[in-house]
Picture 1 (cartoon, rainbow, N blue to C red):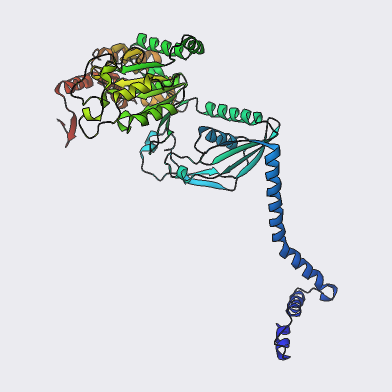
Picture 2: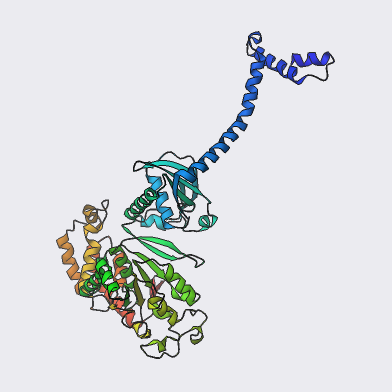
Length: 515
């Protein structure tokens, strides 16, 4: 500051900027006890000039690198681009996140969609604040695989993916996989490896697909753990015949025989029976048994035959298409010509009363099942509670190849259900047979469970109760096999009386009432 005052007192109001800056610098160096006589101020000025030019040099280098990279990518890289909404995109991103993970500093944060561990039923019922999901976010990444150098780049993030409630933060951006060389074969091998990894991750789950909120495309709606077929209780001989039929149909040799004989390669099933007998559960169990995805088609919500046709064209082969409650579309028709040919297929919105009737016609449904433009290689399952309401043209051979009746539970199935509910093998490692004995007031081995199951089955009337009713009873007695066996008689009496009287029972001030 002394230099500034000296300059001011000397009358030099217009100071030389360089002399003024050098004076300040010398003052600073004096404060730091540096000897300014040994320091050439021109070197400091040159250093300042170099530092000031560094950002411009950095921008020049970046521009040069982008030019060189574009040239290398054009002539020396083979690449494959996968759009953001494609399932392969999600498979690759998950594979990259697990393959040689590294420390990330940039993440995408969003509220977690899933409700935590599905095994913790009590925690899932609590109204708690949902967790935040952090997914690594990167623009480009170099990595080695199978002795080759690859580059993965993500860009053009889709805001519609972020607004989708089912979006889990993975697979919403366009992904490009590049490899040094002029052949895309290494990239194809990498994609196959990522898909195999994804298949291994989902081998214990069934992926259920549904149309998005706009009805524009198929999206994974939920992922359910595979349900074993022995948890769906109906006639064992029918079950084995159904399994054998599907297994034979999916055999590659069967497809070749169909094609060599100019036969359409498709298979249709009709599951019918009272409500609560497990028609939808059987469809899900079959998808898990044969490793197939399940596509759910809700015909009453489809706007037109053209939309239905577009939906079926986008469904891939080797999957199960589920048409639930197929009778609901035509149940409101006042007349129905009972003819097995196409003369009975004329049905439209004008012939059905009500404001909630579907605009899809029976002819449109039949065309997507076996029309000229219908696809092959799928398994179509239709379910209904009222088979007598179905048009004969819909269930003729070629469209429905096997009819499966799922009726009320038998005593044999009730015994199997009891054993499955209380068998120690059904519990996880943290819920072993020792824990079962603690809940049951004493050790219960398999011999004791089988004996209780026989006594339990004796109290079940033949072909009166549905499996869902019996499952509701088990939910009240999961802690004790003895309590379930002892309480079944009184429960059956009340349930049979309720069915005979109709309506439902509720509690008012501790008193059971029926309406």
